[in-house]
Amino acid sequence: MKKKILINGAVFCVAIIILGFLQRLLMPKYMYAIPEGNLIEEYYDEVKNHEVIFIGDCEVFSNISPVTLWENYGITSYIRGSAQQLIWQSYYLLEETLKYEKPDVVVYNVLAMKYNEPQKEAYNRLTLDGMKLSKSKIGAIKASMMEEEDLITYLFPLLRYHSRWSELIAEDFQYILKKDTLSHNGYLMRVDTKPVNVIPKGKKLPSYQFGSNSYNYLDKITKLCKENDIKLILIKSPSVYPYWYEEWDEQIVTYAKENDLTYINFLDVADEIGIDYQADTFDGGLHLNLSGAEKFSRYFGKILSETYGVPDQRTNPETKKIWDEKVKFYYDMKADQEREMAEYGYLKSYGAQAQQLEE
Image (cartoon, rainbow, N blue to C red; front, side):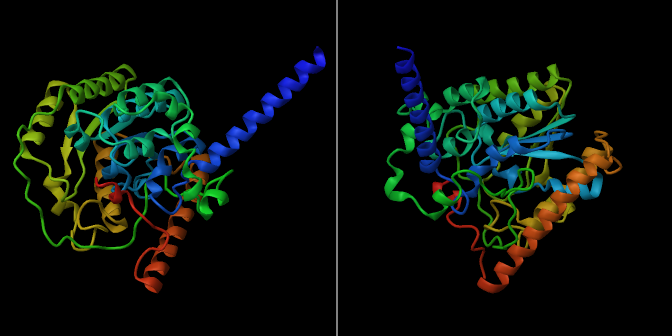
């Protein structure tokens, strides 16, 4: 009887190992195609002592450089951003983050307020698959699922990706056990340039009112920050598209005033920042490239330092040692991307981008 129990236990353990291996093999690796899918997962390997946490969509992970904030102001920061990150996802990511660390300041980019309901499974996966299993992840899944989706496929992704056998590529095998770090504290670097040719006008909408679900989660973010004595700053990052309506802006201005928050629309000061949409964007105005992100970060860093008193950590030897390595990684990648641009005229390290998902 005892022997039978041992055999059954061994078989069970082997089965779990095999299933775990298959899940890691079949899940998308997001190394070359859509690297945005790795951003959430990379946070867990970080030393978690950040003074500023950014949450939101591509307008944070493409537009803000934590290394620039460090070099100019000694600010330690991390971007918990992801492609089309919906506001309920931002809330649960913040809730999870506060289990690991307590920043002085949280910055939320408000573009996603325009979405009141779940949008698309592909974008959900770019955020949710990277989260560690926790109460926060389960909450984020339940809030994000489309009608045709099942909770269990997020808890056990093998059930969703089991049919990827025919789609496996070299990176699926290369990165089964360990992935390369792609971001710089959540910032996804791009040195290439695609200028703005046309500044789009906003299409007339049936209604400009943000939905009750969006406001509910903005309330949750506000409450969570106040309960933890964290300063919450709402921002609209500088980008030409998607269009940011005046009616939307007025609602955020009102919300910030009613809740004693700061809201900064950086579109209004793009010229003062020095943003040149002919040189500082890599995709015609949706996102900033490296030069644009560094300009924006220097401008915003001054506000964080002087107005909000975020301290300079460059005199802390342990913190400086950590960030010296980050700075080296940052400039090594910058040099690599510039070499790719010089040789090929485009970045080979970026395959299919998240724009394929029809943002």
